[in-house]
Length: 206
Image (cartoon, rainbow, N blue to C red; front, side):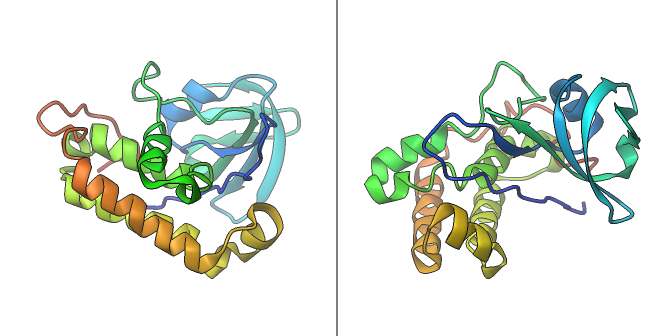
């Protein structure tokens, strides 16, 4: 399985202001999340990045005011919203809520990273709930990928976000990432769904 997962790093703001959140570019996720009137940022397979206001969402395409984008052409998709994307695998089940719980175990410094690491945490939650049934993944793989994803968020590629928007420290970020990883590695077993895992292609076809 080829993973083409692009992280949208949310702004670390102490308010309920709208920001850009990633929407997984798969039909079930697009149709569950995108509605008429939504503001989107889209990168397509030809490398073109564009913004549009949604007029309608059909089974295979997003119709904007001045353009139509086929689902199959979307590489990355972001929605301007006050809240993260819904869980299209199970809309009644929230994602990302475990980070604040980990932060409360680890201390005040780590809690500063709960919003910044949201994309990694969301992916980890999907893996725990659906990874076994869909991609034959075990807890160790989910946890290792979680660490790798956080370390990618701590990489120099995110220099502008760190310096201008988040005001975090690279070295500290990697330390906190390792501490979050150790928590799920040591205490995550009871949350990992193996025999009770449900099938959901949150990373595309296996």
